[in-house]
Length: 500
Image (cartoon, rainbow, N blue to C red; front, top):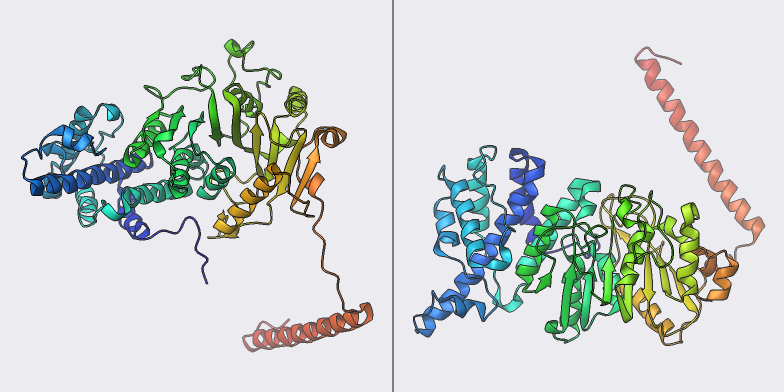
C-alpha cells in the first residue's frame, strides 16, 4: 500500500502528465518557464472571471473597474489576456504571439508583475501545435475554487515546481526545498507574526509554508512581513509569481541579486530566518568581502560559503530572532580553514538552540547527509542545546525520494517545544539535551550521534543454543535448495549440448 506523503496531491498529477507531453518539443531551459507561465496566466484569468461574474450579477456596471478587483486582492486582467481569447486562438499559428501579448498586458496592468512573466511563447523554437494542445488541456481545468480560495492553484504550482526539481536533479535544488523539510522548520520556529526572511529564497516555499502555518493556527497573514533575496533571475521570477498567486506581499528587491555582494535588505532585523542555501559553495568569495561586518565570529574560508551563510543570517537577527538553516553535515564537525573556530565562537555565544540530523534521500539535488541548525537569540534554555537524530525517520515515496510524514514532523516540533519548556527527557538514539560545557568537551563538534547515543535494543529472549540450532537448520535447508537448483541448471544445459 502506497503511503500518502506531503508530495501526493489531487488532479495536479494528471495535469502534470498532460502538460509533460510538451517537454520533448521544448528546450529544457525553456520548458519550466513555459509551463509555469501558463499556470499563472490561467489562474489570474479564472480568478478575474469569477469576480467579473460576481460584479455582473450585482448590476452596478463596474465589471471593468480595476478597483473592484484590487480591493479583493485579485489581479485585473485586460481583455487581451483573458483565457477566452487565448483558448479561441489555441490552434492558430499566432498562439505564441497571443500568449506573449497577454503576458505583456497583465504586466502593464499590475506593477508588481513588471518584468516577471515569461514572454517567450512566440519563439520559433516552440512548436505551436504542441503549445495549442497544452492550452486546450489548461482550458478544461478550472483553477479557481472559491471554497479553497487560492489553494487550488497554489497546490498545482507547488507540485509542478517539485516535479521540475525532481527532473532537473542537482539544478532543481536551486529553486526548491522539499516540503517536509520546509514544514519541519516552520513547525519548530512557529512564525505567527513578525518579519520573515530567506536570503536564498528560491521559489519562495518557506514563505508559502509560513502562510499556511498562520492560517492553520487561526492567525492573520497580514501580521507577517516577508523579505527575500535570490540570485537566479528565473528563480526570482518564479518566487514573485508564487507570492502573487498566494496573495502574499513580499519584498524580493527590484531584481535578482547576490546576497553576499549585494545585500538588498542591509538594515533588516528579522524575527524568523528560514533558508536552504546551496551546500558547500566554493565560488562565492570576492575580495570586497574581506573585512565585512557580517563576519563577527571569523572570516569564512574562500573555499566554502556555509559559515558565510550562517553569519549573514545571524547578522540579520532581531533581539529575539530565530533561524532554521539547512546545511551539509560537514558543517557540524569541520575544522578546515578556521571553520571550527567560527563554530566554537557561535556556540560559546549561546546561539545554537538545536541540531537535527536528517535522513538520506530527502533532497532531489544532493545525496550528501544534511542537517538543520536552529539558532536563536535569547534562548529559553540558556547554556543548553537539544540534539535530535532523525536519520531513521521518513519513508521512501519513490525509488529515490524520502519524505517525512506529518506525524514525524510533529514529533520533531514537539521535542523542541518540550526542550524549550524544560520538560524534555533524553531518549536514547533520538534526542538529548546537552550543556555547552559538555559540547566543549567534544571539541565543539555538533554531530547529534555523539550525544543521543544508540537506541536501546529489545532483549532477545531466545536462548543462544536454541537460536544457533534454528539458524543452522534454516541454513541447511537453503543449501539443499541451492544444490537442487544447481542440478536443474546443469541438466538443462546438458539437454542443449552445453554440459558442464
